[in-house]
Length: 580
Image (cartoon, rainbow, N blue to C red; front, side, top):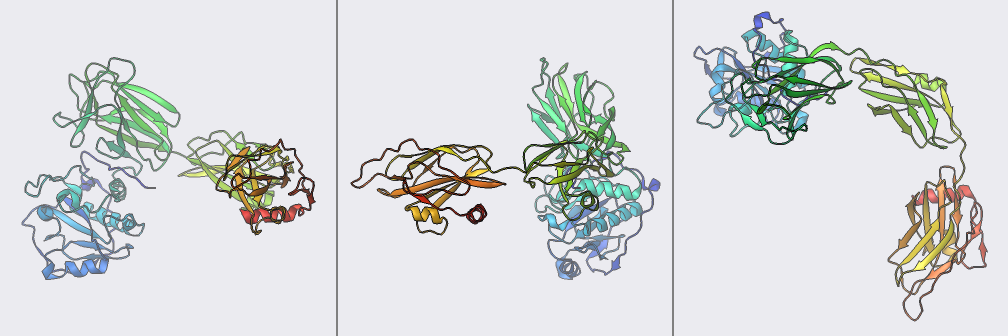
């Protein structure tokens, strides 16, 4: 699962307490481009992209004329890592960070999401974890970046992007790189944190301003990261400014939710935090005049996988200022596999559609509805078996099923830990055989001018749609698609009129209407079989009220008193399908 916001840790654990990760296989392929660190301690690792191929990057970084190098280069698929400069030496990869850092080049491009495959990422995680353990580097991603080439005012230890050191001309590893995943996976290999923990600071994509004005502050002591947000209070009961922290949780379960803020005497003594979780929303007021510069626990709550849970803070408080800084979601108990849903009910809505309903299952991130036309196919998931991933809902309507068929069904509730099937009683439901639609009646045609005719009718009911056919002769209308002057248009089930434009002036048009559904179709013909557009020497023709002359097997074609044969229904339906 993609995780899209940066995880920030205030202080790293000393790696003397870390578990020793496995050292990845590394190929020594030295570059002449290096010099001495001058006794500077390694406290950071800089992540780069090669902006080219693995082989090309290795060749270039070994070329004396390039004036560049890196300690490590990782192949596109992660199957090979080369070391070009010893850790103890200074590689040339990140200007003023060279003396204090180790440089890792990842084969690929900063602007391409396809760089970060499940081949290269595990190799990167393994290498960074080993280096953090070996050199005591904190597995954190510090916020901020240098403001100019001359000032060099970004000086944070940890896992650093090239863009933070040289923002004036570098963007790597780019917007598609997941820093949160890097920190989580490295700490997981070091045994220093739960891979499910998430921290959302006010600078992360998981933070957003929902409404109102929130200013940025940097001066208060005890802030999390580089800054915080603040808003003036409102005396009313409804907030005029709301901020939100929304994590992307990799697994459902119980999470301890805690907030961080810098305290102050003008802060809200009842900052209205509200936690939205799997069981609803819980409001927790916090006195921001005390306990600042540390995590203040709001409580432990159940959450689903993903982004459905969040924390919000409004400015409906007192006395004067409310602070929005950081929120931590710490995994306490991972969710077990989602239990089977209960209360399964199936209702036939018509001959082709069934509505399925069930009760919510605890910690379920979503559901699958399975159907088959035999119990054996349902169990084996073969033959007539079909299923639909319906998401986190507890009702689903399956459309377009076979009239008269029996369907066996079940619902599977799942989350990251697994899932279980729920089975209904009775185990199956049978659809009615269904019938063709009723024939449309009251067919009328009204000439609107030289090139337009308005067709109107009353729907007979049960139709899925209509085809309106016109032709300039009775023979062409009967012949249908392929005839010289035949034209038609498909209309929706609820249509009762259609204005045909772009017709020829002073021209006779014969017409009919075809109503259809999954069980068949029926033609309806107007009592006055034809109508003429105006133009030329002809006067405007006013149609009279039409009467229904419809049939499933035969119908009147052009000419008020002439009956023409119609094709049998199967051939008729075949012809309709060709039109579609």
